[in-house]
Length: 147
Image 1: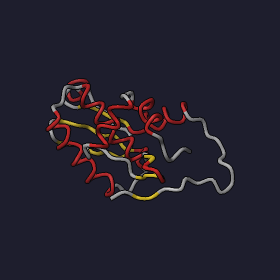
Image 2: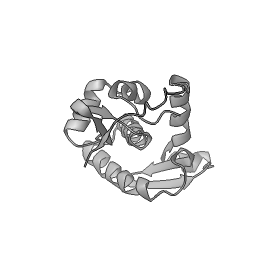
Image 3: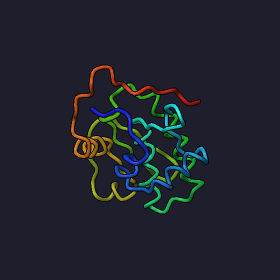
Image 4: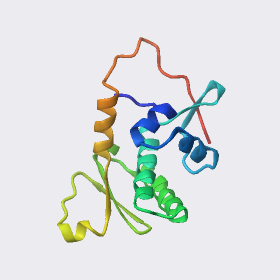
């Protein structure tokens, strides 16, 4: 299962431009979790979730201020999640994010009040675009954590 993603891979998965990813990194909006030597950026699955949520909210005409508030909340929530991230469903209403473990069933009326994001769909897309490949022995990426 692929764990690290280059900005070009992220752009393809999240359906945003490479330049947008650069801009979000430069403005500290959403930064990659790791950097290789030479400032080569690597994004984690958690970073992809943030990027995909940002993209989804942008598609729903969230203002930049609301988007920033919502992502700050999301960044605070993700480290507290004890379950596998792939099992999560986010329901976003205004500035609130509700996090559920597992499938969330909603009727049509209540579903219209929320923006829904299933993390499982992101993992499935990753698995389709990057079929599992066995890395050469000892070829884990050399990364340095960013602050």
